[in-house]
Image (cartoon, rainbow, N blue to C red; front, top):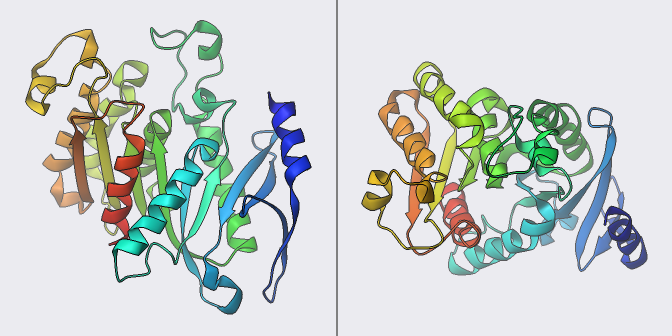
Length: 292
């Protein structure tokens, strides 16, 4: 699969140069920039997709940057959301940002899991063997990807991180333990159930003890997929059908109990969306909260 994808990218790529004082030589596919960075930390090449504002060629300004985890799946949808937000508002906030999609279709459980597990009812044993690579992925972001983007593209220090599912778990993990890396966080239906709710349990003390001044968090919670339940029904339910989403309600409660930590927080329950449909409406609401 990986070899096929790489061959496809090479085949369709065309030369593209960012016309500025410091030309950028990358490849473009479907009007999107495809760049690559070799990670010594992860010992692999990582592909990233970039969308630059139209004004970038004639401007010397620095632009806020939005990083999207699982870039292959979520980059185009996020760009469309930004376009729609710009069209709906007199503000150009949605247009004047640089969008970075961090590719990851091979190793999500490795990169997004903050702790290792030996087994789970939700993933197979072979996949579980590779879990716990979250710290290495964060080191890759901090020491390799963010400096690379800052050196190569006209980005400001204003950073947003978006993640869904396991990616949402990593978003919460970074907010709690590496809050200096980003200013804004959008966690869409995060997998707070991971490792017997280990990160959730840690979050209670962290949210109480730390200060999150000038940080924003948008938390989205989907409904369970088989039956539409009200928020009150989900909170009261103790069956297996809501076991994946109840921890996110607990996280929201922990945040709201610690308002003195100065975290700017908003959350929303989507009763008509399940885990696989919630990402687009939640990203729209999250970006609207962050940018407007």
